[in-house]
Length: 341
Image 1 (cartoon, rainbow, N blue to C red):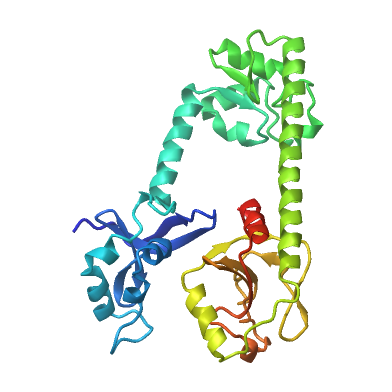
Image 2 (cartoon, helix red, strand yellow):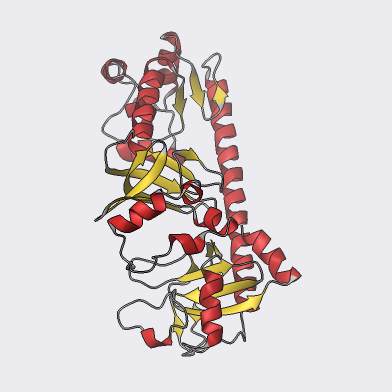
């Protein structure tokens, strides 16, 4: 089989937008993760759930929860399971797998090509210094058209100064145009390099940037409103008692549920202890074993607090993921979930 070298450098981007970097190898186009027992296939949980194959990837009789060579041999011999393995590129479930090393090499080659022949774009701070070929930068420096010392100025575009000696000076732009390079300020391509044209181009750049920032702020405000409404929807929801039949039903349903990451502006009330906890995000488990997650299955929405931090009352956990409460996916809840995506 064609095997790539094992390395850190495969980025997995889920359909939800969540990203992670993994150790592994690509074998015949499929992604395998590095384990103590060897390469183990990286399966798509969504495809496994959709095709009713979740039980097949769980440890079988005589196997442990730890991945073993026997387990790897069993799952790789199952063609239906292997059809659910993530592959390099875009996958059926919307997940993308990227070879970071290859992408970095391609990006570097493109930057080098652009440095020699591509447009010179002002409005990106000190990147201008590295986006130009060294010989051209050195010539501009000798002519006083780039001030290499004042990097603070280069990074602070709001302090744009057209005075001679700065990277944003009209003289620098006209010099590059005389060298046959296409010069842009943001998305505006200069044709004459006159003071009037440059001033107008900067005005357009700042207006466009302000509009883009306003759009991002509006999206954040909408996310905050949706988060608050979702939190309110869980008010009064009672958690299944740890170890109960209902808690086991939670676990079974959560095994095929889909996680949605949503930012929120306030803390989370622990429904079992009545204690206000943090972090205040529906962003999933953090490095300390805590965090808040929102999961949705076909009929239910789950509010899960990952109860795994040192000092947490672990016995309060009523699911494998932590402390969970759930509410039915009513029409109103489905509308909120659609807005949260």
